[in-house]
Image 1 (tube, rainbow, N blue to C red):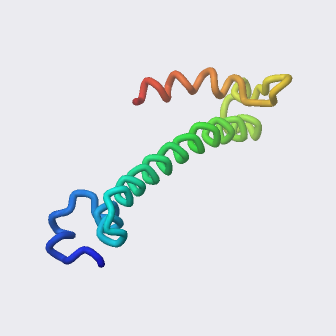
Image 2 (image 1 turned 30 degrees about the horizontal axis):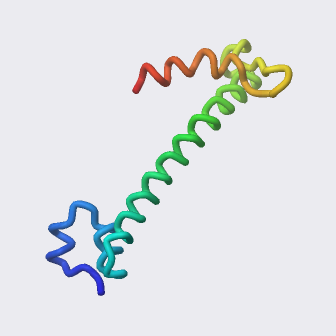
Length: 93
């Protein structure tokens, strides 16, 4: 019902293989891989949105240049933090 130590040692993806063993179905392992990918994408989204808000907050408090604290008049999003830092994010990848 679970992976043996030998099966665990040979596994390249232990959690999906364990799910396949527990449910005795290949779909369970694929579901775990999908859940892991969804979790990574969710984390990236949080870093993307939260990171620019952090830059805005630091600029608003005077710890970064003030021009990074400009908000969009209608949407109240940090315009300059996104505009200046987004290319840096893409270049770092």
